Length: 132
Image 1 (cartoon, rainbow, N blue to C red):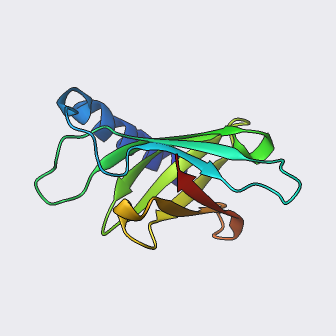
Image 2 (tube, one colour):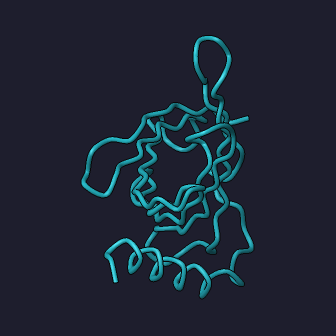
Image 3 (spheres, rainbow, N blue to C red):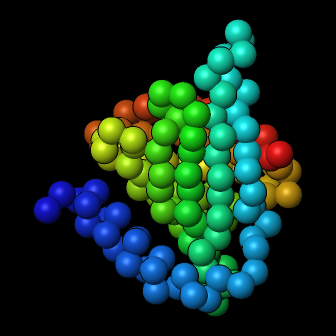
């Protein structure tokens, strides 16, 4: 079994275990919209939902779903640590990768910088999202 399948499986198991406990919304929960290309195309919508109640040590588990055109179609489960969310993602075509979301002004700043990485560590894409 590949490392990404093990990672996604373990994250999904942990998420399912904590799913019934999700009673409160996190400050980062919401819908974010990317800037897109200069001609107005390629805008992506990112939805972030917490799937855990306030954990004991400050980390949270999130469901991430991106929609839009082309490379926008993917979903992931991520873990937060110090205002950054890192997780494994699977694209619409089934290609595995990793994603890292950073909040440059903290989670209340309503801006996210997203970087997706291929399995070999090369950068797949970078996008900036603003909370709607």
